[in-house]
Length: 258
Image 1 (spheres, rainbow, N blue to C red):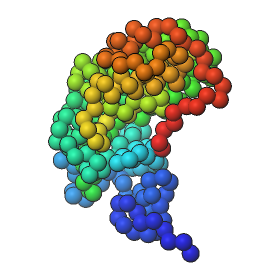
Image 2 (image 1 turned 30 degrees about the vertical axis):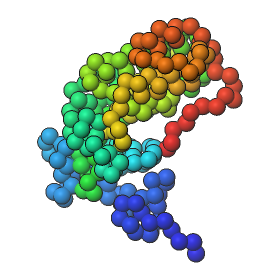
Image 3 (image 1 turned 180 degrees about the vertical axis):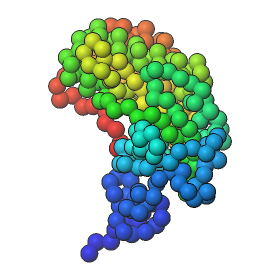
């Protein structure tokens, strides 16, 4: 019999579930905020509700994102759990309390609302956000056969969301096409930017977001010049008013790591 990889949370070898590798006991035990007071996270400003994990949405280095349900309201939320070892600046602008406070202060209709930040019983940082069920915006454009001018307008809305975050002192830091989704259909399609959370690694910058936005634009069908040193969201937006086409069938697309 082949040896099973140990669970990254408890070290057990009872077998992992999905890409997270968590054993069944740990996955089911991720009911954050349960009766064990050792699980009351110091990042939380008040004693909050219990969230019960339903499934894993995505994994990437140092981070696992879960779909969960709030125990009383049954509201669906995402739990973005970041290992402390992956967030060395946990008390700084990108990694912990200050970051969560900034996210909670910032309210934009194009961003799922951050409900609270906590620490799990294992010491990981967990950011709780409203859940948005939607498809990546570039795929929505393909499925709806959205023309170039409309794609440019949708991308401008994405840029406005990200710029508003910058005005509130919040950079995303890991923008990818799969984290920019489309809500609604046809002429009522509106973008939403997912993944605002605590940062694993260095504090994110405006430059990180500009580079991420360019990747989003190209996935949506922008065919402008590559290799430019965009210094701001506004500069990139000015350069992307033209050059939009439908992405060629079969063209490679940047996928989520989960």
